[in-house]
Length: 71
Length: 268
Image: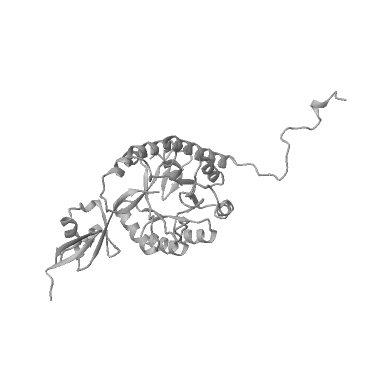
């Protein structure tokens, strides 16, 4: 059986995307500006330049990180 | 940033005028943070990364705008990491978001003391240096581990004075002194545990090259005034180190010349 859509987790949200969608597609669908965050896919850093060539698959976990204050 | 400062601290080829590195966490508002940065005169500001569960309101960029315009450098950290794998991933994210290869490497091994995990720290430092990072490792005063980190390519060490946020000062004074004496060429920065300007001055008097702190300023009743107090104390400690402290003596050594007993002439 082939899936025409996949389910992924973006931080604490569950999203449905077309099969073959990339990390870039995910950020666009979630309305997240590309340069405002860093991305990790299943705990692995994905550089901004590699997002468009990083396809997502069913069950993937994507975490977004952004600048904050720190000590 | 000018290179004409009479006593710059050189890190990664960058001359820093201030030896006061300031953390940016825990302030009441972006305006309060900005005022503290100015009072501190800090050239290096630590920042962090966080998962975007609540959204970015741009407050950090607002607070740092003034400092960055005068050439202050950002030093992202890997706070919260407990493995080399986590820290390496977060460092790469920080480099992308902050556009700097400088990274304050924290890999914590104990939840109560927030003591660094030396094994994971060294593994992460080695990998990150290989990946082109300038690694500022948050470490203990352990001399052998310090050597290992320098051998791995770290340009400096950042040993703790006491547990992060504890304000206890230089708890590990003997070890810190040994580290300075045994690594005379290394850039050493006390990071964590400083609670009072006198403690910062003490670190500088030991010959440490800079001090990094956060909570002591952010938690003061008047953070701006405290930032200024630390600025003066760190400069005073540096000046004292350069001037050369006298050697402690175990017994009293009279400072007033008494030979000849000039003032006792004429007494019975």
